[in-house]
Picture 1 (cartoon, rainbow, N blue to C red):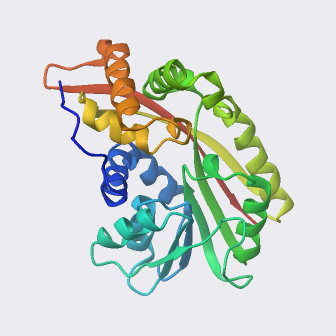
Picture 2 (cartoon, one colour):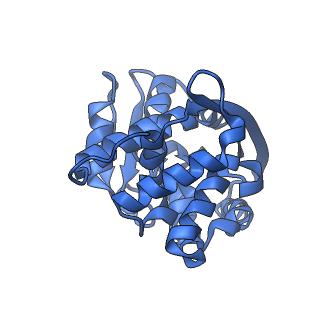
Length: 265
């Protein structure tokens, strides 16, 4: 059993954990997102709610050295980690609210968001802003996790969070399908009429390790009221709940599923 550290992790350590925990689970869905976005070589891209830049880096690779890529997030700590992990790519990191983007209208060829849409408080305004900064022939692509019955890892986390923080902590977790529909509606209102929503399902091998799960819980909006000790207790409960997914090599092989929404004029 992993031991708990003597002192709470720093903001930088939490942000590094965010990169570690999210990059592993997100990788297959980032690939699907970039494929759906159809980023032109030399194009300009903005990544909304970019966190530590997992999808932003993939967009920069797709756009190439002549492209322009910006990652936007409200969390300065996550952006600092994103900058440290940019792998030599030229990316602009911007601390800003996705509901009030600091860019002129018609700036970007593509707007993308990797699981960021479910974290935005006023999704309607954010999608309006995304459409505003797009060029007239620009396109949008975003991912949103499918409900908990498609994602046992997230379901186990939700059960553990509710046991420690109460069901009220999970307000909004059942609204993911509504968010997908709202995104499509607002994109259409913004002039992007060729809208496609598809499902991407895959399996991901993750560590059967309390520290990894606690790191992932630290990235969760629904676990925001759990302190370090609470996340450690929740991680133990998640491991117990997912015992049937364990492999013989200290990992768990789990199914994950996400919606991918992409839209063009």
